[in-house]
Image (cartoon, rainbow, N blue to C red):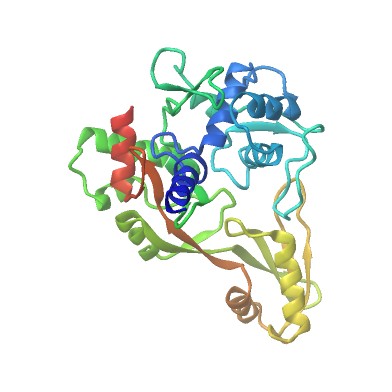
Length: 341
């Protein structure tokens, strides 16, 4: 029993739930990208049916449910989930309101430029390969990854007895930090933070304070507080309106609006007349009407307190390093990536 459980736990940790520090990918994502590359789903070619790609991944490399493969592929194509999308999707790939994507028979996909970049020079004997599940073909153990994808796109996953939650970052800042480390490997984490000041979430919003970021970069654990971007507009009826244009990472917009309406109904937040989602293709716009004789600033502070307009992202920087799960600080991630390259 003990041996079986340990085998299972290690399999989930190493081959399913945690990303590799070198290319920042879990096995399912690596297999999707590699299959897309070998199958000719290139960024400069026509889109192809998602069902094709899911089937090829499942048959060739990933003997698990089609749902798990499609979900992983969809996430790589969502601009609100990924800082740098690795799949370029066409069709309904879900939304910030938590709407599900269309079934894979309706959507189309191909590699994005950055997704294709992760596989650059894979055919030039750059990385080790291993046999697939039935030993009928070879798959890469890791992708060549010319940029540190673990920092750029972050990661999240629950293994057995451990979990990971890594925030995404700006590609240019990450590359600058790597270049600084290459020039001077003796740099401290604080020195690296001059080039990489903090996470950069795809949904925008503001990070409050630097302590959480410093903790995460120094120890691998820290809590980053994110607050929605808002402004106050005066409208004609001598009332004020709070307008939300950017939300914290991973906040469901539809649920947020429902929550605000419910809090107003239950009189937990005083002064909200209505809350509506007026977002369109030009951008996000959640409009909260403030009642007469109430101050928008006061109402907004109550909303920050009671709703996900202000939320925290708990960093837990755990990744596979040298075949073992390890808690990593910022310098260790950059060093591991540079050594790999």
